[in-house]
Length: 167
Image (cartoon, rainbow, N blue to C red):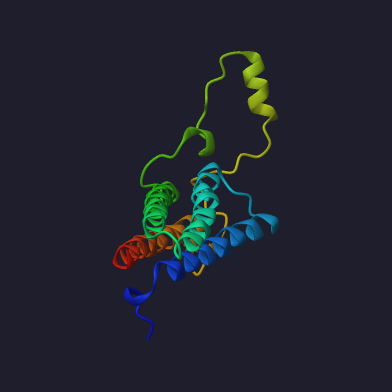
């Protein structure tokens, strides 16, 4: 059995990069298949847009600079921990535990003028953040992202710790 504590920082960074790539790739495939993302879904993608290149940079730095590797992995851990919190918030909106942002839950946003009203009418279909469009094994994509982001944050923190051991 593979022991995570024994993995070096470079391997962990590469695992993070692969998981991040597969996750964001899966999101793009779902979108291509017609499952349009809501505003909160789009915001959750930012962690992957930043985390993937940071993980690759950490993997490259691992052989030459343990301090840089540790720093990059610490940033990745923080980014994905924040993303797990955002995914938890989004899941709560889906479960109707709390209200979501007005711009994606169908709440009326009072028009200040007739032109604002017409702009609101001309908006194409708003993808609601409080309705699940796709479930996989009973989980919405926001639910799954809680676990994926938390796992990536854990791996990045472990990699930062392991980079310290080598320094």
